[in-house]
Length: 187
Length: 187
Length: 263
Image (cartoon, rainbow over all chains, first blue to last red; front, side, top):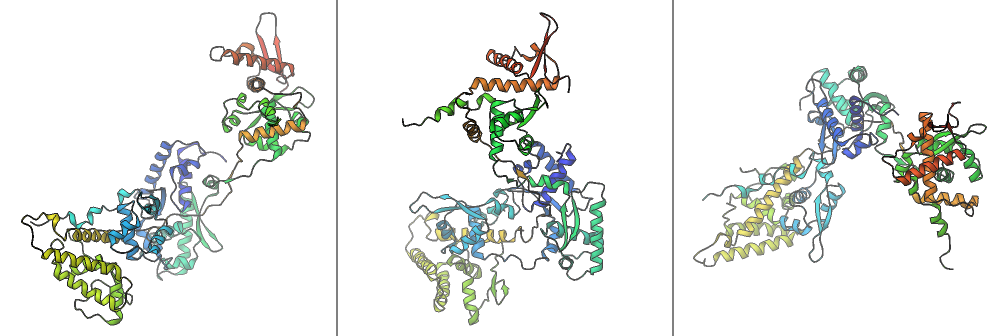
């Protein structure tokens, strides 16, 4: 095989790999495409260019190149999502409120123990709730709290960020938006 | 959501769906995208056009739209497959004993001819063995010996030293080291 | 800014945005209503919002009465959740009774018996809103579709890894079989010489005829290396692999591979 010797060939290889990956590809993944003959900084520059190429307004592109927590991926532009969703009407069922509240606590208060979650929600945590989130690879155990019983500490995963189209936790809607206590009190 | 009302919007929806499907989409699948507002013949025509769009563009496309047994799919052009394959390499099983011994002889006794190797090992050298080592860029021909047939002289390369993390051949364990280790400890 | 609460309770597949204002609840729906609460905090929040109570100045008597009424209903239909709810009942009654006690002259705000309850209610309410927001965010698998075009899978075979130990083991096997061990030992010095033999041959192959002194980089190489290099030249000559020529005494000495003219 002939190694690429110019920018446009390199960009083509990146594009072909990202369009076929089906998941985000990290910089380390993408470097493998060039068998060690690529600098990280050059790679970043090429990805920026590729992103620009696909963002050009006049060419009616249907995908966009985005960066999420674990890397880069092409995804359908939002205006096409609803049409594509028609292909699989048996959608992934929405999670229960218990699952989503547990997820919200882990996302905003991590790392937390089951005890912390129970304290905030005021009810016992159903083990099934934790299992659903772990099976989705949205949360995992990151350690133990050094108290009697050494309870597991839970945190959200990078995969959770990927699935929500985020690069980092700081891109979550700020918690202050939800906290009523921030509203100035009448006096 | 606003249903598409012109050819180019319809083609975009088809394109976005096919690029993200992860499997071939049949005509029946694709009709679902338009919630019953699409004729099969029109759909076929649109797919033909889409195929042409991706085939004739002067800007080099990395994918092509093809029809396979179960439907339509976008696929990377063949020249990119080898690069994409680098993302998930399969590790090859170990080298055969013949390869390893040949390599050892060349490393310790270079420069040597195939005749030398055959004499030391007592068996004929399979040309395939030499080819494997040459393709790996671990050995190369550094000259010919001036005897009838002018056999090639083989030596190890710089690349071989790099791969074994050696700065020079003198860092190979000298033979005495393990000749002594053959002495039984309890005597 | 006040965010509108949505209860999201489902009865027979219909989502109700709010509960009926009157206390009558159709018998088959009662269980569904009560189960829809995620716990005592959720129920309390619902009651506070339903009766337009000020969360920062909760009328404890009223709230406790309302709460007990729901808990009684839950007991009737034997919901499993009772324990958490009963614990909250006890807490509410305790707060209520503490508020009936005569207040000291100076009441610090944190001494309000309701403070902890209010803090927990507010935190839980924020989490509820955060959960709703997370739920509404586009997700991969439903609202986000990732490109996954096909490619021809070629097995990119990674070459086997060879360790130094494996190489040495192979060499040791060779020697064992060839029975070279007794009359041939290779030391570091000899390995260096053989390496330099290869280097010189490679150089001669590339450059053809090379002047003797050009093979020595006296400036950068240390003496041991120069010696090894010289020994390598002698060994090459001995093995008939190179030819050394000199036109006359004291004129430059030239080296060439033994096959140079014919290739």
